[in-house]
Length: 132
Image 1: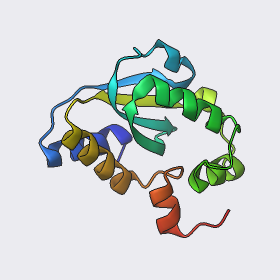
Image 2: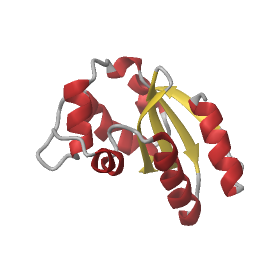
Image 3: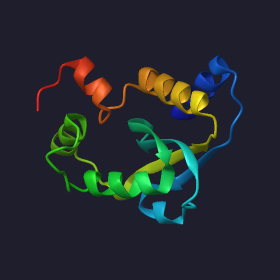
């Protein structure tokens, strides 16, 4: 199942209709500053992270992490991903969905994390029992 099929499945389950927009991760600064919603970081149809909030602002933070600029407070999932995956964030895609209702934001984020089990989300990292 592709990422797009998985997203469609989650939306159908939750009864949500929304447009998914693709943007090369390296071009995240082209995303409007005011947009709130859900975002998904992907490479080769593998989901690395799912989050919610101000989409562009959050991508700036994730861009630094993905390029190895990790702080002590950063999640272990990101550390594991940067240390163990040979990936170039310039090749990633960010898919984002503009949502306004808090209930939709939380429901979609939680379902996508559960469905895709992204490596950099601490929920997945802890559930998998990975050791950094």
